[in-house]
Length: 322
Ligand SMILES: Nc1nc2c(ncn2[C@@H]2O[C@H](COP(=O)(O)OP(=O)(O)OP(=O)(O)O)[C@@H](O)[C@H]2O)c(=O)[nH]1
Image (cartoon, rainbow, N blue to C red):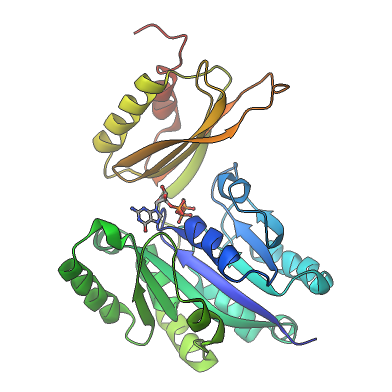
């Protein structure tokens, strides 16, 4: 058996990594995919949202970030995966939206124990066309992710004009002149280009990594926290409040994900917010036996106070009077 092909998926918060991964899993079927998924915050909303057909297993790494504190845990996960080699064809590693992928890339290229079993085929960076300029201007992470990639998908092209897309592609080339850049929507891509293209070359990546390392790196003050509530929410109050909240805290709240219990509603409601957008959609039904229909919200942002957010979200519980 040859080396295990690895696809590393990066991209800033809310850029569409889970959407892409779902699409990838369907597109490469009948090849079987093993996923190592790293999620910021305690609740792995994304791993629960992956399509099942074609996925052999999802190994969650939930606490912290793969590129920093979880490095040893990544090595452990790779060992587990290599012992299950016969169960799958491709390995996908999904990083958090603030990961610097360079140290993960380095693990594959420079650690001989890893390199003799795994072959890093592509470092894929997803960029949110609507927010890329904001993120490049306000954070260091988005730039580092673009720098380390050999294939960049500029997604959410449905939200922008073709001329603005051209401007963004030029901005991307300014950060990373050698990566292949494709524009698209909702995780769609050319399967044969991705699977058959040979994008990663060790020397180029190592050179880029050393450039990315020039400055001391930490995830600034972008941090996640989770809020959990036992009682159900009022849908109208909650949707109105969340829209108000993300506009009011535009410069601090980067991402909110939630699985919410709504009073007298049979299904979970999934909340997705990327900066100032908020969508609430029906998720899977609650089981009859599930007496405790807990709601969970993961907030990711800068200098955010958990107690203040909790107070604001709490006042939208169905039992709270207006
Ligand atoms: N309009 C539009 N929305 C998209 C597109 N791709 C993804 N989205 C939406 O963007 C939101 C975030 O997508 P996810 O796939 O969850 O993003 P992510 O990168 O996994 O998010 P994190 O794990 O928090 O970093 C969801 O509401 C998606 O439905 C697209 O091409 N166009």
